[in-house]
Structure formats: structure tokens, C-alpha cells
Length: 362
Ligand SMILES: Nc1nc2c(ncn2[C@@H]2O[C@H](COP(=O)(O)OP(=O)(O)OP(=O)(O)O)[C@@H](O)[C@H]2O)c(=O)[nH]1
Ligand SMILES: [Mg+2]
Image 1 (cartoon, protein in one colour):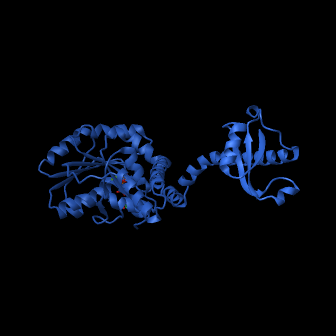
Image 2 (cartoon, rainbow, N blue to C red; image 1 turned 120 degrees about the vertical axis):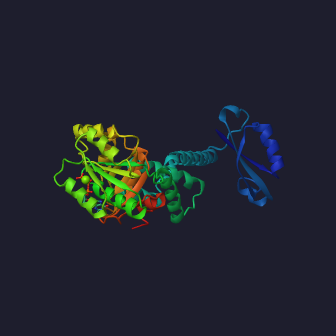
Image 3 (cartoon, helix red, strand yellow; image 1 turned 180 degrees about the vertical axis):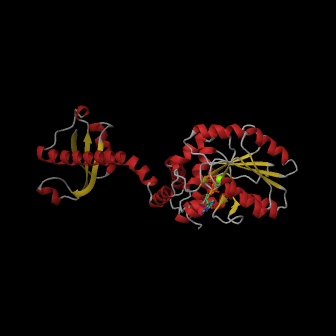
């Protein structure tokens, strides 16, 4: 690259001379008003325009070589400028991905990520939710905490599922041991019989656990509802026939270890013989994420079609509600929050569940 200086009266004259001598590729690096020209006598002359021009060496055949001192001075300056420009561009390109990450890890989103982690929401679900929020933030960067909370509510509500009480004539309660199947059945039986005036019959096929039949008999005695204890699928069929006059038949089952597939298959043998009915998978809200996956997979032979979450009063992390809907793709119908029969039960509500997950409700 060659550097040349011109001293002219004005830019028009400069441009003409530059074009004529160096051609159209010449680049003006600087122009400034200076006294007359170089050297001591330049100070005595009127002000003129100094134009500094650069042109590619290969195309500057007619450029007169500059004084070596001046040339090296300007060449160094131009090289410096180009170097600076290059490093700025490299820095900008290098910053691109981190600019995107910065958006994803904004404090508001980090807050929600940590919150959802504490709520034991599945990591995959957290990623999905945070990514969707980040997309929103790209559109409107100035979103406040309240707005992100509202947006997250909306995203969570979309993933939660509930359904109206179906009121199927036969309702079966299945699930792991000790989750509250019998207690929930008793709460619902009382609710149907006492509050809705329905004729209710109770069947139990839990003759495995010592005291199970007595537990159910106690509820039956208190509510005055008839109870049938069955030992075989055939007996179950007959018991249902006997309750022909009932508007509602509630069937309690023995809690089965999620890992004991032989027991689960045995119980499935009873349920498969039933006419179409509501089969509630009862899950404790204290269930760990991995165990929830096992429950969902291993209880499938029983063809459950609705969910009940119990013991909400025993935890303050409610991600299980979201995880359950996500895994099973089934609606939650009831939530229970205490041992008191028949009070501690309510219809599942998406708004309430979402508020629990976001820590806005006790
Ligand atoms: N805190 C709390 N305890 C509950 C709730 N529901 C049931 N329980 C209690 O959990 C314990 C087990 O309840 P059950 O109804 O016997 O559970 P189950 O699933 O029938 O148990 P198995 O038949 O042995 O599998 C009892 O002490 C209930 O009072 C609830 O919503 N909250
Ligand atoms: Mg029970």
C-alpha cells in the first residue's frame, strides 16, 4: 500500500488530481486544513487542504514515492487502524453466542430456573419452559418479574391437565402402597352419599394387608355404606352385580409395590374384567421424580385413565403435579391435603396447581 499527500485549494481540486494520478481505487485517509505546505516556508503561505490518500501498491504505478520518514509514519498509522478494526470485528463475532446466552441466563430467568428446580420439576420440562420464556424476552427485553411470572403461569397452565368430575358409575383406586387410596375413596364415598345424596356401594379387593378390610369396614360403618370384600375376579364381578341399584360403586385395591410386577399383573387381572370405568392412579405428592416414572410405566397394565394427587399437605414442592401430567398425559381430577375424612379433598384446578408450583399459594 502506498500513501500520498496532496496540498490543494479545495476538495474538488484534490479529487480531480487524485483520480487523475492514482485512479478510482485511491482511498482518502484524512483531510485537514494546514498552512501552505511542507517545510519551513509552508508557514508563510495561506492555509490549504492537506489530503492523505492510500492506494494499493500494485495499482499505483504513477504514485511518486513519499519521503521514507513520512511514508513509514502513515503506513504504521494505517496498519494500526486496520489492526484495530480487525480485532473489533473478531471480538464482535466472538461475542455473538454469549449475547444469546446472556439473554437466557438473565437474572429473572435464572430465578425461575432455580425455583422450578427446587419444585422438583423435571429438568427437561424446566428447559422447555425457560426456553419459551427466553423467546418472549427476545421480543420485549424490558419484561419485569411480574410479567415473567404471568408468562410462566400461562406456560405451566398449558401443560397441566384437569377434567370435570366424570361421575362414572364404577370408580377404581389403584397405586403404590400407603399413598392414600382407601382414605381418598372414603372421602369421595362420603361426598357422593352425604352431599350429593347418591346411593353408593364400596368394594374392596384388598385382602393382602392385615387390617385393610377392617379399615374399610370402619369407614363403611361410619358412613353407613354397604361393603363387599372380594377375593377373586369372579367375586368382583358378582359384587358389582349385587350393587346394581347403586349410582356409584367405588372399588378399593391393595397397594402394590411399583417394582413387584407379579402383584401388579395379578391386580390387573381383576380390573381388566370390569366394564368401562374410571381408574384413578393415586399418587402421593411426595413421590420422587424417578419413582414417578416407574409408577407410570409399571402400573400401565391396569389401564388407569385419571390421576389423583394426595398428601399435598406433606410437601412444599409441587413439581410432581406438572411431571405427572407430562408423563401420563392424563388429567388430574382430585387433590387431597390431609387425613380428615371427608373434608381434605378438592377438585383439581389448573390455576391452583400452577400457583402451588410457582410458590404463590400455601
Ligand atoms: N397428610 C396426609 N395424609 C394422608 C392423606 N391421604 C391419606 N393420608 C394418610 O396416609 C396413610 C395411608 O392412607 P391409606 O388410605 O391407608 O393409604 P392406602 O394407599 O390405602 O394404603 P395401602 O392400602 O396400604 O396401600 C393414612 O395414615 C392416611 O390418613 C393426605 O392427603 N394427607
Ligand atoms: Mg388401602
